View 1 (cartoon, helix red, strand yellow):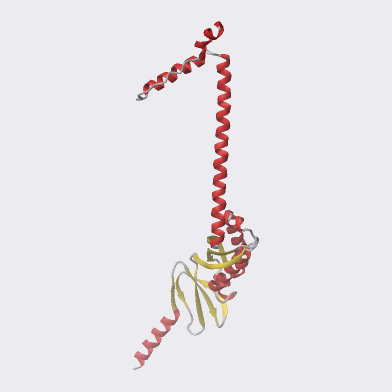
View 2 (view 1 turned 45 degrees about the vertical axis):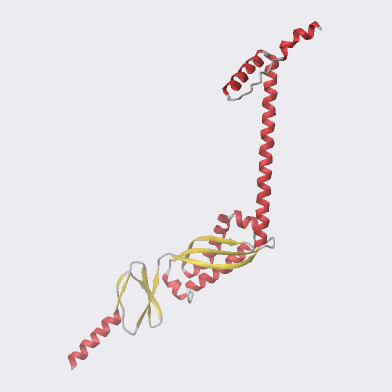
Length: 245
């Protein structure tokens, strides 16, 4: 009976004293309520009843920030959501400085997202996401640093606009496309007129160029399968008759 009791005590001791931590895990050791050190990875030996261990993961965490109702600086109501990437750099701080660092980081990200997006206009929010992402990352990293957390990246995922704003932006984009088409067309007309002016100047200096153009036109007409062919007659052929009159 004694041996059985001894074996049971030994098994209980080993089960309470031995811990195995994976490569990405660290254990914050509390001895009688006080932090003594951070151990891991590998085999960890604890003193039963006296020591307590809190495991902390060092892997990168991708956390989705729920859509937030935001009123931009130009009074447009939108919904914005984002994703943040962070990891624990100091397991001791992440354990003793904040009760639940995942929940705290999520709440901080939501309030920061509303604050930053509310300070910019809609055009800046849509067109300068990289700037918004950098600003969010800087603010979150500064606030989570005392918790031993490093925020590496923040990305605005989606901006949900009201239906009336989407229709207004569609009309604006269509008007912009029409304006560009008119500008391009006017530029083409201007270049064509400029080239015609240059051609007229060359023909005025070299009249034989007009005769060459006449022959080229005849060749182009003859290559077409037309039942009727018109031959343009140069006005120079009628000059002798005009002079005799």
